Picture 1 (tube, one colour):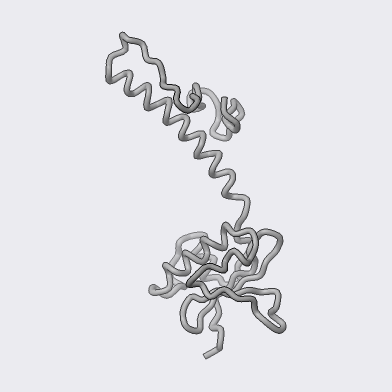
Picture 2 (cartoon, helix red, strand yellow):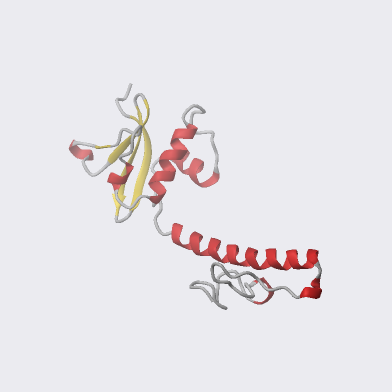
Amino acid sequence: MAAGCHPAAPWGSGSDRPARLMPIGETPTIRETSGSARASRARSNEWYNVRRCLTHARQRLTTIVMIESFKSKALKRYWTKGDETGVRADWRKKVRIILSRLDVVRVPEEMNTPGLGFHQLKGDQASRYAVSVSRNWRITFGWKGENAADVDMEDYHGE
């Protein structure tokens, strides 16, 4: 069995557990008397089980780093529930990109990608960072450990 795919795997036990995981390059053996439709179905079932196992392993790894908290209720609803009412229609795509990046980066400097206008704030806000959404509007955030915290959308210059 491959690492992470054992009888105590998170998807349960019994019939929904992968019956056999195959090394790369090995093909399933099918009895000659089984007929082509049955052989094809058996082959696809075995590979489905392998893919399902790999999917669960990938999902477990991607949930480690995340956005810890939001200051903006509209951003929180948009990120957690998909409720678009608090985010302008012309900003939604960029806000989704920014929040997706914030959800996976481990240090704030990883947000420094072209087009986001990443910068650290100054003065009493020196522990916070900002990325540009449009003209005066920024998504600002703090940092706790490896997680973004207190994510907010602000009119940066107060106009």
